[in-house]
Image (cartoon, rainbow, N blue to C red; front, side, top):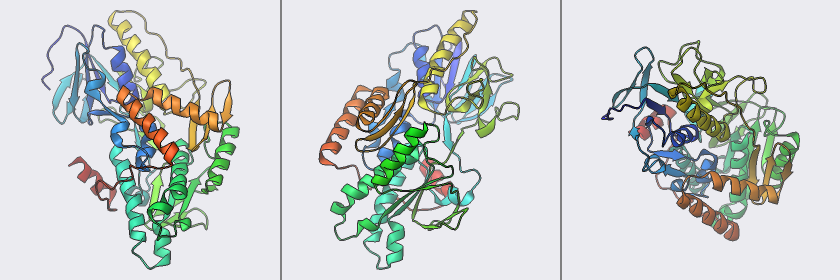
Length: 435
């Protein structure tokens, strides 16, 4: 990889997500050589992917070059690489661009969509965990409406304008709200010769309430907001299969829809060499101790979505969200410095700053440790928090201007079909995207 030798210990970080970036920043001016590996050269702000999918933002508004994030930091190196295997016995990592040794390895690979073994949904459904996937979804949505203009078959036209979103967590709720606003304010103007009132947005949740990780009050208010926007909320229903046109469930309810978005679960992105049974927990996560060390390995750590630190308060690990990853990255940065200096490490203690979700224009729900509120004020809080955590001044300005413009004009001008998207087997799609 052409990384220069150094007298400083080498810390290799796999993954440039929230945890990996926070850790790299923490080590930026310390006596350590930091090497960050990622298959993309940008950091992706995942909480706003749904706005890319629905034309509210362009992808470069929520992505930032990793090299620029850590520009000017001494002893920092980035390599565009895909990790193929970790060899813990020789402390080496095999990648598609060569091998590299490490003194300390940090796994921060994040998570990916979990289809729970359902091949039909995996093949024909749409995921929304990456920027390319979000652009594919945006193209599919717009292409379906273009196709709806051309068919005389009323049943086919309805299916082209129908959406099924599986999963009532923040991603599903926010996407459903955004699509409902498009149906209400944009589609009638873009397609005046199409009866867009027949378009349906269906949110399907397997449990008895949406936003199950939030308070009962937030769940009920979010459901009310969605129903006011015209979203059909289906609870206690599980989607069992999808053939590209028909959505089957565990009940008699069947949906005819050309678009199914799977937001019902995630699993950790694993690495070969760290996939032994003694390392893994539910959801493919790596079991770590209070110092982020993978159980049984003193010099290999894991943070963020891929790590499961079991505590009394979080018996199944911390939430797979940005805040735990950021806090873990910062804590591990301090601990690695302590480890290098032969000082005792400090256990990680998660400080829950709350959770939130937006349902649409002037509609959001916020749960904080001591306060809970919904509505317009919650919406402004949601916007401020997301702007604050975006990386890069330009991105904050661009996103803010877009939000102000969209609010005033009630428009989403990024509804562009940049690259046509055709449904095909997901494995084939992923291969084409990698090529």
